[in-house]
Image (cartoon, rainbow, N blue to C red; front, top):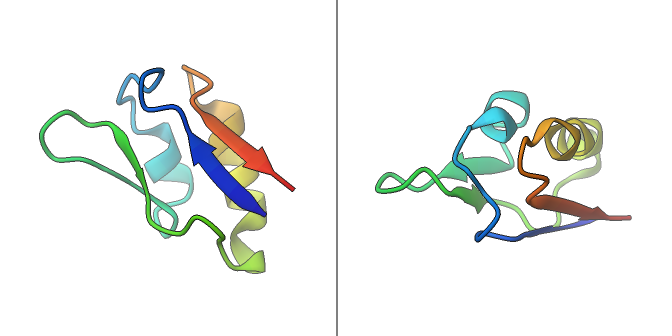
Length: 64
């Protein structure tokens, strides 16, 4: 699994951080998503998929 983010789409809602805090964080100054692990461990796959699904801006893409 690999994660990509379109920062221009991110609205800083933070839903991804709530669902997968081990993989996502937000920049302090503007709340834009930061991917902590571009290739997360397998035990995080379900959380990453859910984070992408709940992103209100569809800024997170998951490549299987």
